[in-house]
Length: 133
Figure 1 (cartoon, rainbow, N blue to C red):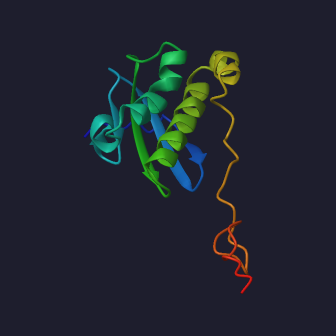
Figure 2 (cartoon, rainbow, N blue to C red; figure 1 turned 180 degrees about the vertical axis):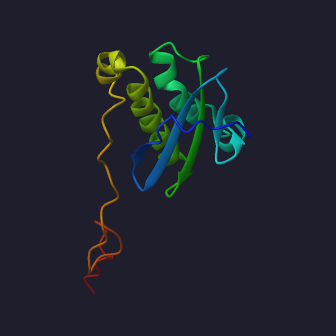
């Protein structure tokens, strides 16, 4: 396990029901999620590229180790939460990253949530089958 410095703040990122707590440490570019390497925790390449996006945009991919704890939601939401958390953590490290992260939309928390189920319906919008006779 990586030695965690007390000076590096923990930053949160959110997406759907998922919450990610992210800590950036100067290092070689390792990303550890819930104690596992990124490739093991997120097996799909799409999820891995979503997580790495803030580091690629700011050109800091080999400069920081990322230690993250993710909970809630599914893997897709967790990847989005982790991306949001890494972007916010990079902002804590260097405020000059704000324009780059802002223009690529990485600082904005995605507000889309699952719509609640309504009574008298099967799901949020789907009704029961209508039978005339």
